[in-house]
Length: 108
Image 1 (tube, rainbow, N blue to C red):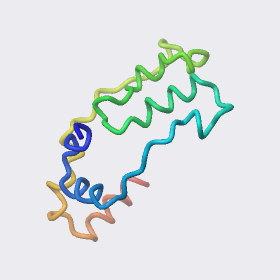
Image 2: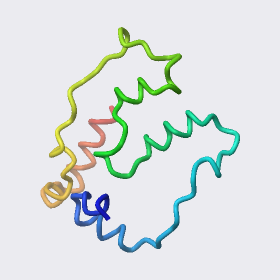
Image 3: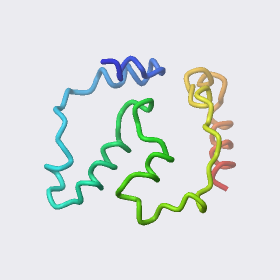
């Protein structure tokens, strides 16, 4: 429940409440022949709560990616502020046309 109440968007919480409960199926059951390190990394990538999810830096240091990890050749950036993802705050101020224009600018 802690993860559910960590969702800031009321609309997202309302939507999730409409979904049927499904028991989690372990990745090892779905992919029995997969590398256990790959499954561990996948589990960490797909952690529901972003606060508990693996960071990019942690992922790059994960044993599964060790053969590709070169700290001298990996760019990094400052984190995006959480307010950037507060979509409910701006939903009424964007017209459909303005939203289309913003998406077009982002894609091109």
